[in-house]
Length: 124
Image (tube, rainbow, N blue to C red; front, side, top):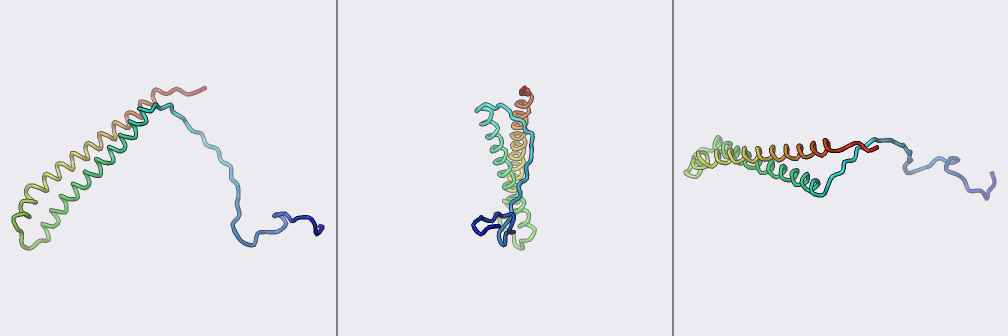
């Protein structure tokens, strides 16, 4: 080899750094024609379900914390009795309603997506 020819990377292994190996993959995908209103509905149903689940979880955990505090307290005052008798059950009912609304919103989004898939035709 002449002194004036540049050396190629195959002649000298790299001394430092990383080595890149190209791997080619293939993937089949289905595309669905979705209108703007359908996309907005899908997005809003997902957000609505997430908010309802978050609020329901918060309310149920607040009620559970009232009952947990009730177990470990020595002297119960009037506000503690009121919280255990009225506030915690109301929180449980509201939390269950919120989680139920989240399940309903999730099912509506799933139904909308199923309708989009059922009305789609395979392209030729």
